[in-house]
Image (cartoon, rainbow, N blue to C red; front, side, top):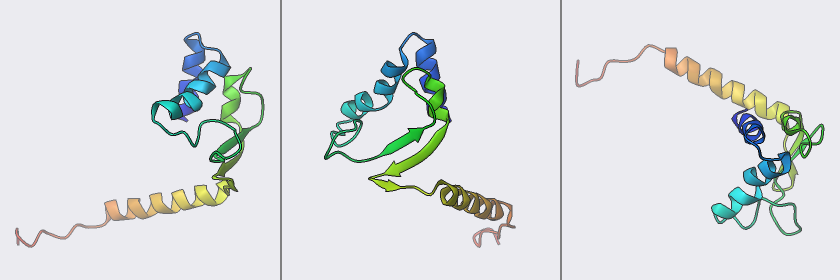
Length: 106
């Protein structure tokens, strides 16, 4: 969510939606020397987000994600969310479990 908010803030600050998208993709990839990503070009990594709407005219369309591909492979977003929930539950159980005394203190 923070990326979507940052894109909107860039537009609020005076960038066009296209300029804010470039700042978040190809320009950032270039700054970090990631020449294999940041653009939709044959031969580059196929990390894509499909949105419902046109973010070049309405930057808030980036919040309406319809699909995600990582290195050309579609991501099962429902399975991803379920796995994140499972991991969060496991961490919550660990945090609430009684702690054993440190043997050095016993």
